[in-house]
Length: 403
Image (cartoon, rainbow, N blue to C red; front, top):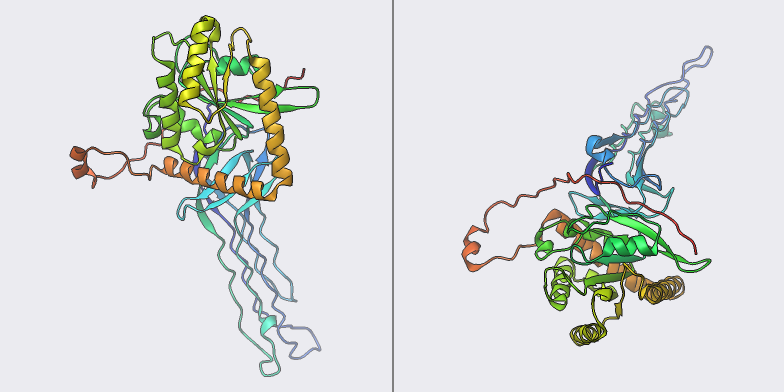
């Protein structure tokens, strides 16, 4: 199945039903008076979270969703039927943005959660409503109000506690496959990962956390190079970011310089995302001797004094127990604080809102690109947004493993 994590749709709620103009007419009852009933309300368009879905590909082929109109009222004070709501299933983790106002309407983050994205029009009223002591035979009714029409941008953001990022071939997929039962594609060439994947890590008999792996980030990713920036939005809901660094690159490049490239790209993409806790994890330490490993650790601690630093080998399992245990403890503490510390929860909600703003700005390509002096004269040119999402691959996989 093709993995699509962004789509634009149009939703049209139903119009309210017309009020009825009617007078009571029965044998032996003269001047029966007005009895026109109200119309029915228009149906709404509602998005419903569904765990069985993991891609927005259906919305590429079906971009229009309409709810039913309300029925008109009728005589004898009969009210018209309400228009049927249109319920549309979306993957859990979908954010909904109004394309015209850029307002975030809401997020669908739970299975079965309903989010009204277009309200149905209010019903019209019949002439019975306008009867009074001075107007015994009103001929006035009101039409039903139109329903809301909106163009929406749907963005799928995977729900995970821990997010992995790094250069291509840093070992992210190997790490996910080692600490969970997920089986992302693993190969000895860059850009093996083309779509995000999820793994559930069991860290004890009754505790676990979800880790998300995205395609590798390269220099220039924040400006559209490579695949990583396209999927950085999937890290926006994570609580901890793991920056995986290849400690022994086969191309002979400097691990510290590589780490600084990724850090700068994340900062360029979203300053708010860079405020998340970021742990530096040096991978493939089995390829270094003790002296080289200790020297590399010193370099990283000097360059990144405020970040937690771990050394592991995803291939041999060295250091993984310590890393997984520390992650589980950090995730558990964050979950508890979110539930008990109101100020912390508000601060996290504000941070996520700022991240969402950056994600939307990147998707719409509305941030001004970096320009040289020679390019400044061309800035009046029209910006073109390339929304071609034709990478093939399987959808995000969620697998459970218990110790």
